[in-house]
Length: 329
Image (cartoon, rainbow, N blue to C red; front, side, top):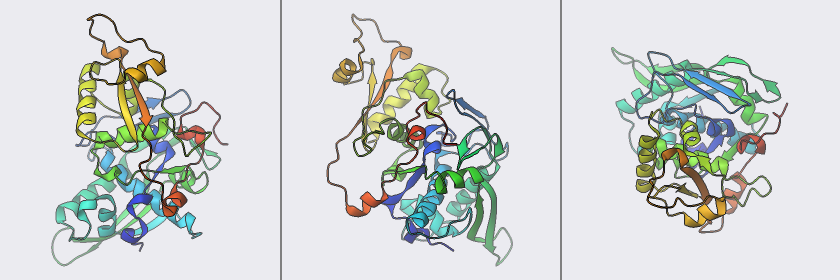
C-alpha cells in the first residue's frame, strides 16, 4: 500500500488539465442531484449523478488530485504505474485534509471518505475527449471500481483500513501518456470549494504557451460565461456576482488577482484600459451581463526552490489554455 503522507508533499499536488478546464464537480457544499451539461464547441461533457449519492463535489475532486499526484510522482521516479491502486484510508484522508495530519482520524472522516468515493464511482460522465491518442465517445466513471477493505471487530461496517480502486482509462491515459498535468498551489486545500474553482480557472487562463514560467493576463471573460466555467447553479447573474465578490473579499486566491471589470466594486481602472473597455459613464448602474472577469498573475515573492522547479510540469498546452488547436490524436 502506498503511504500518501510520504508520497505527497503539499507543494507537489497536481491537477489533470481537462479536470481544471470544465465544471465537472459541484462547487456547492452539499452534493447536487442535478446533471451538469457543458460544451465549448470542441468537447462536450455531461455528468449524471447517482440519485442516491449525488454529484461529485470539489472536495471529492481533491481525492482525484491525490491519485493524479501519485501517478506523476511515480513517473518522475521512473517507477511502474497502473490504474489499479491500493491506498491506506488514513493516508488518503490526511493527503486531502491538512487538518487531519498528525492526529487520529475520526469515524466521521472515514464516513466522508466512503461517501466521496461512492460519488466518484457512481457519477456517469458522457464526453468526446481524447486521451493517449485514443478518442472517448461514450460513458465512464472517474473511478471504475472501488473496494473498501475493513477490519471487522463487531457489528456494523467495520473500521476502514484500505481502499482498492481502479482509475478510469481516460484519466489514466491523460496523465501517463499525454502527461497532461500541471502543478497547483500548496494552499489549494485551504480554500473553499468556490475559491478552489476560481483558482483553477485562473491557472488555466493565465498560462503562457510561449513562456510557461511567465504567466500572462487572461482575456476578459464575460460574467455569464464565467458562471458556466465555475459550475455555479445560481440562477440570477446578479446573485452570482454578489457571491463571487464575497468570496474574493474573504479569501486570498493564490498566484493571481481577480478583477471584475465594469463593476463598481472593482479597482481595475488600469485593467479596463488595457482590455479596451470604456468605463461606464454617468450614473447608470452597470448590468451584470456587461461585467467581465480578468485574471492578472501575481509576481513571485521569492525565487522557486530547485525541488519545486522539478515539479512544475505543464503539458499539452492547447488543452491547458483552452486553445482551438486539434486534439493530440
